[in-house]
Image 1 (spheres, rainbow, N blue to C red):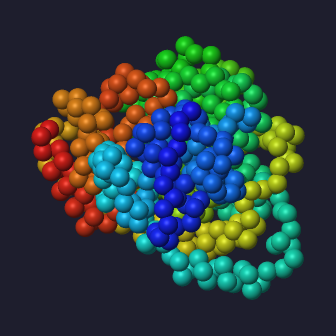
Image 2: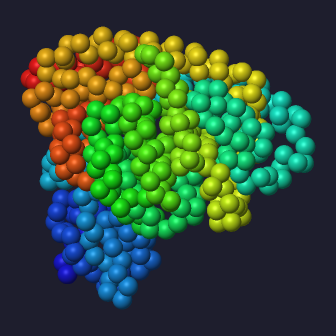
Length: 482
């Protein structure tokens, strides 16, 4: 335990507890008080400084709250690890640190990456073009006409009117064959996947594409599912390797695989459906997260549209096609699983407000959704084509893939420049890119799958001016590689 020599000089306008707090905080930052060091008890320090014990209690309490100290029951106060603490610049301006602390702060500032001015997020969508006036008008009309029934609990699967509208929309746009009673509405896909655990059972062996949508992987992992990572070829999940596993369920994104952008051709789809039909309890979860945005060729029907044996569980969302804050997803269950749903999940209340369901229903039913989608396809296609033109300067070093659908593309280094180097160089110019390793289930999976030098560039939320400047900076950041 180290003695604390604290100067409590008058005339600086600071209260006693603040002086004690700042002295100990600065000593920790400078490393004068190392991690694990025990501090004097509040009683002994109060006696030494000739101050009230409550004053020391207040100082220690603030240091604990900010993460500088740990209070261990019956043992006292100890210096906590400070690597993850954030030191605000405004704090330093008000209270200039000692020379040693200033040097440490300067080092921390150099270690922090520059803020991203141009964020090529593959998950972002354009919110500037959202029809706020239309949404507001529908909401206002619904609230004016609201009655007591709208504020009742409602059907656990979602309001029938919305489920009927979703079933019609899916059939006309994706070829999905669904009755309203097969549709379940939920607040996001996480909730719908959690329902599937109750329907399919616990500890079910499941196969996922590698790389994959990592959020779904983490949800399945939380179920204690045995997860098999199945490599992909140019057509998607390798069914031959799938057959060599004990998987009962396969999670796939056949219309636009995330993150690779692969579109599964009809031959591979038939192979996958054949695998599902070979076992009594085999199912395919089809995640159709962004099939609305395709810029070349004709739309490809959903895998569920080709399912004649009731083995495909179709999952979709309005987060990409409308806005993330809508938080409305839907699932179409095969008829053979409906009884299990009603037995195991029928008592769960719907997680989507009935008012929100009514707004969404009228937005789709009255044609606003179709007009909005057509407008956004035109906007996204313009950004897509503009981005491809800007990326032509990288052709010698990088291979472009995943284009013509969705809201992101991929760049893969021909000379296998490590993903980390590409990301760090871009960050140095204020450009944020995303590595494909973030979508892998294991650390070395990207390298084993041939994606160790691949980054993602999303363009959904960036206008052409921003895309142009972002690529200009990226060219500067990668000049040494080109």
